Length: 246
Image (cartoon, rainbow, N blue to C red; front, side, top):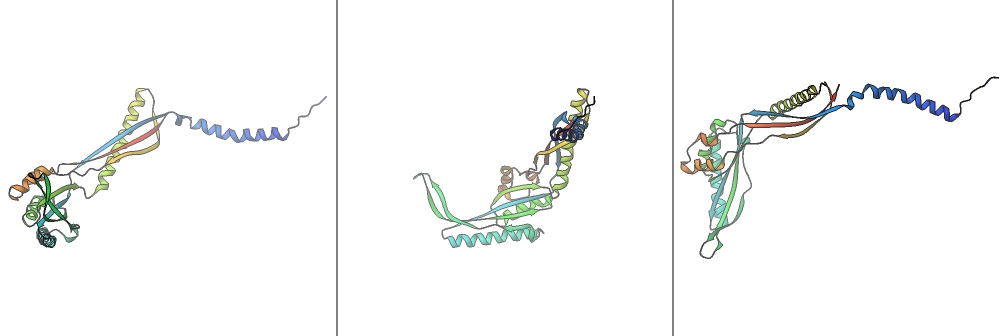
């Protein structure tokens, strides 16, 4: 007696699905190591001396008449800009910001309220200084020639890209070093990086201590280099990396 097996449509479909799944299962076995991972963060810090500064001067004038306050401000601003030009600063590196004109008020101790005492015109002069050695002299000269407020000095780097890239490279090296340390403690080895995320990046702009700078200006408007010490810019990068375990 002989038997013959017949394969129905449902059986044929099941076999076809099995044949398709086999390569996928084999691939999963090949990459099973990637399922064992180690996640670490890395930090990179680069310190660099700034080579450029942005200085903001305030020109404030008062008068009983608003037009007179504006005229006085225009004259003082012009003198301040001419002082900057005399120090060899290019026109593209300096600008006058919008004029603000408003009533001037002073507090009256007797009436305990603010009284209007005329009008006040305010304008800001912004200068980009590429030679930091001239900064103290520039501040003194501009103050002597028309500006009566030093609103801020921010130090920056001309080439931000180099410092940024170096910080990121250090962060990645730090992450891999941590991963190797943690894995070797467990008797394991670190494989390839599966994911890399930049978590944070900071590029602060140091600002000169204004109290000390204002003191230097108010004494005699003479250059005082120590009041404008820039220090260092600290560039910081943090990354998150997931490595496969071998």
